[in-house]
Image 1: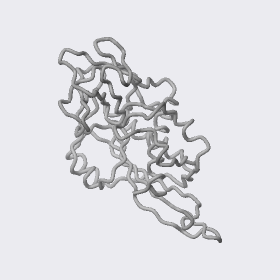
Image 2: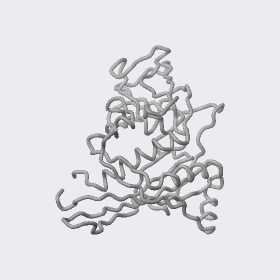
Image 3: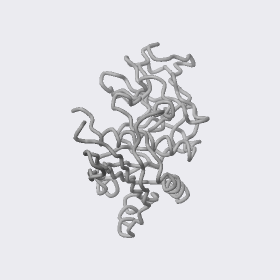
Image 4: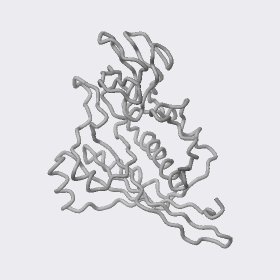
Length: 282
């Protein structure tokens, strides 16, 4: 299926949200760590996981270390060397074309996101009341690798709430409106307020919209080439962020959430994006 306008906007919103959170909130940490075997293959590749789910891939973020290779027993290798295939930034994994010996020490230097951002189609019932979350590993703890199904917080889930086309001008121009929800699971009231404040202040700004072929990641979550958000989105078509609504959360919802995840602070933001276009000419 060919990507349509809604697909392009929600995917572009995901990149924008990540970039904004990292840039405005400086929500990352630079660390060095080992990568641990997961004893699982992904599309024929051997995966070794670091202690964090998501790594920073955007070189426009000042001060963030963008991992470009891995250390094997202290020797730095890049893609194509010693079986190293690449880095899955979304899941914090290093991929190899063949398994490494148990004595091989795998390590790397990178920036990880203090707040994961996940594009999801799961409903709120599943995310809030039927899922058990683990706190992100703290600095100073003895780390281990994370598995694919191990969910950690802080995290923001982005979901497409719905869209509509409204008549806008003669000649077939419509105002295409897309609503996006952000469910925030924070580890402190301070961080929840900071995320709310960052995105409340982004109302009445524009969001660059990329073509599907322009997205920087391949099917493995690896970068196709170097990724700088500002450079990639320069001169692109834009959607207008009409509003950002901070929702008041019902005490009943909060009580149900705390029964399963008592240390989580919940927040919900609703975004409304619009773009004037000629949908019947596409």
